[in-house]
Image 1: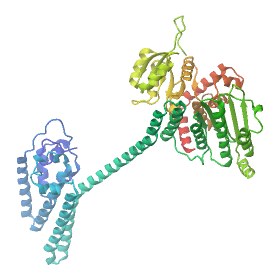
Image 2: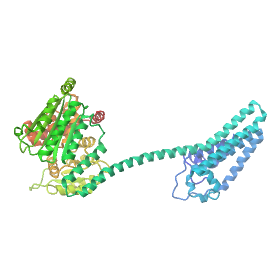
Image 3: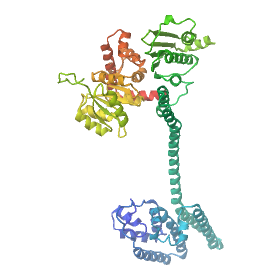
Image 4: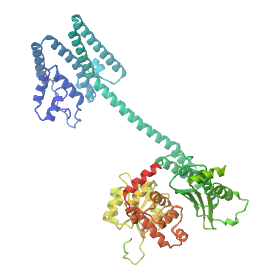
Length: 409
Length: 222
């Protein structure tokens, strides 16, 4: 259901209803006018539909011009119906209807404007442009007009209330006061009709604004990240383009950080085994300009012993980076029910394990000794020309975790 | 498996590139040019489907993420009409969902774009020979996917369960071993290693999709 742009007299409510119900437009209009007699129900309905129904999307073809002269007969009929009612019933009802019509007419005027915002662009067609004070009431573009409207509405409500008191107070009877209350409610309802679409639209604007702000914030965050990291890295790469090692180091660090940002849920390296290993690998990558192919299967909580395992793995990575003379080192870790295992493998120079001097503490102290202190074990397999693999194993049962901690102290 | 070759001269492999980045295609083309015939390129899903059907390459190097849909769409469409075309996924993403998803759709392997040119050429050849190509990371994902399973036999153990041997092979793959080194380590032939890996791939493609979703859910919990 919508209000069409053609075949309309005021706002197209009747035409839209007729189109939707499949009855002649004239029938709907007459029905609305007749309903006017029942405490202005017709006008109320019209205003309600006006506020609720969306206007038909603007088509390519020019809509048929609205001829206001068609309004005249309906206005006449409406006037007749109201007068007839005033004659049949007593004056009081007629006065109520008169007030309601007045209030609703104001409301309808504002709604007319707010629901047909497209009209503002073509204001020349309407009287708004030629009568600035109308524009001041109905346009919502600046704060001043909003204030004006707000004060105007307040004055209207006040006048209505004063009118109620002035008309009904002298009677001093209960029924008169009761009527006065009803009158006041009708007045308030009229104001509500005026304000509700406005509020609704304001809420809609606020919602849209908030969504826009969130989107903008996300975009800004992304832009900041790209600026801080990617652009700076690219600039550095351009300046260091002769130094291949440096370029690779920069590119690798950037790739890792982008990857983490895009795909990885963040985990604290002090709490999770996988995160700690990945951080160690990243540090070695950055420091020694090599690639560490990290694969971690499963994950577990970090404690002292697990931290020692990570430290030993880091030492193994550093050794591989410094001595193997290769670009890529593999780091594989697996969390099993009863054991954590870490493998650091390179395809580099390799060495004779027996040939390592007793005085060299890197392997013996940082890897083998550290693992033993924490109840694990380390094996190193290496042969010249065949690369090196460091295997670190750490049994994890509940008992051994406690035992390991006590042992460590 | 490759089609029987009609000519007597050893035929060069034909390779098709699907990637939305022209620069990357150019790079791969120049890297692979010495080893294989790059017979075509495509930058979108629709273009890839029609061109691959026309050229019928031995191996398609397939990007995972493209603006108008994933490489998976290409894979599924081509496999329906031309099951003999083999796919090797070549992606910048090493997210588990992408990798496992593409393998399940029928890719014979998955390598990341940081792979060296020589390794890429070797991977293409291995796929063309009917083997699977497992990067260490892919092996890690597979182990992860099957790791949480209890060792009791399930309804169809043949299908869903990895044998201990397959597990060992995958572990060594994840540790960065080459097929040759795995064979030496486990005292089996290279051919056996390849069989194990192919079996893993088959199981991965055939095992049901509930597994994958459950696994993904598990991972988020971990």
